[in-house]
Length: 241
Image (cartoon, rainbow, N blue to C red; front, side, top):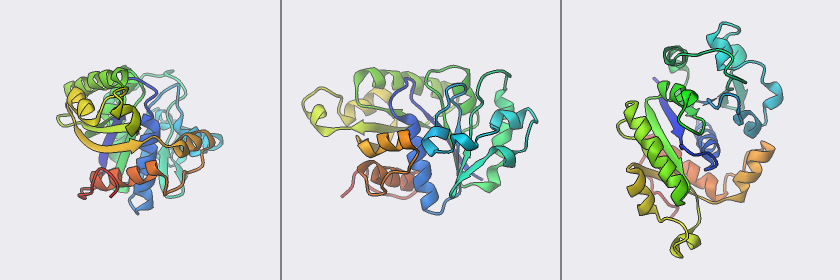
């Protein structure tokens, strides 16, 4: 049975999609079968970040509505499988429909990662409905950490007892000067177990724009590798030795 994780942030702009995609890529490179699904209905971006926007014809909403098969909608980018989000909320989808769709794929994948949209609305809840675990993503500033704390309360209300935390775009110098929150402040505010700290990395910004996979040796890529191993049950340090 696949392990299903929803990636949430509350506020947008923290790099949640980049984090989810980076971890998905790391998983696939390690031989794990992984599906990443975009739940940002109407504002989808993962197809651009993967460089497959021109090949998207159907999405998971089309599958639910019977317009196509799962095989028609899922796009394979190398060893990584991708499920695009619907272009708009033209049709209403229920949590049960979404959950049943991804349950059908349980035997085909080791991991499924669901990229929830910013905010705490209907699409956010649909993404959560398909998952068994929640990963909170924040940057170390007070505005985003507060928003992440609100998202943490929301996912707990939806039944996720032990959400986990990733701090993204971490830069040590502003933290030491007190311009950004330190790691302990982030953990205390969100009240979730820390599973990764991803450093600021221009290679990830470039990848998001071009759709070209970043250098595997870039600082963020190495952090994604460590998070991947931790999610797969291995005991590895949060930071590179």
